[in-house]
Length: 198
Image (tube, rainbow, N blue to C red; front, side):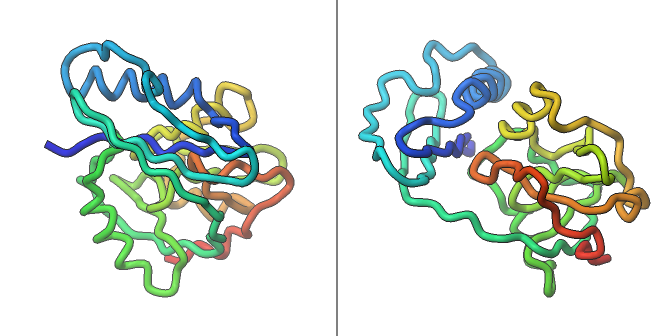
């Protein structure tokens, strides 16, 4: 049985998106272990958070144990995506098993990342969720492989909209961004859509 994971951004000593990580932890734990967790994700974690800088906190957990890793983090640019297809991939729980994702990532050719199509629908990239810009508003697929915490917060705040997006719809957008817990949405920024490679 694989362990589950939460990857959490820490900025200047503050845990970001804490509410959304807790919600996903509780839902994932209940599904994977078929019972409700007796604790919160952050219970009894002794963290000496630095007061300056951007860090990644990784919490890997099983039914009864948790282990943490903590390291400085810098956001790498993702300027191009290679489209790959897989109609059977399942990564709806964030776990240590990224074998199939890594196999697809190996097909990226000259792309910085991949854009995974499942049954004709746009899902996610290897690194995270994708959001598309149409010149006025931002949209994210309603068929993600993983419902990310950054995505959940942006939807709740009304900053992005959920929409059914097919492969053939991609070129109707102006641009895109890749987001995840460590990669916030950047206002007034996008990579042009022609950087998505078939």
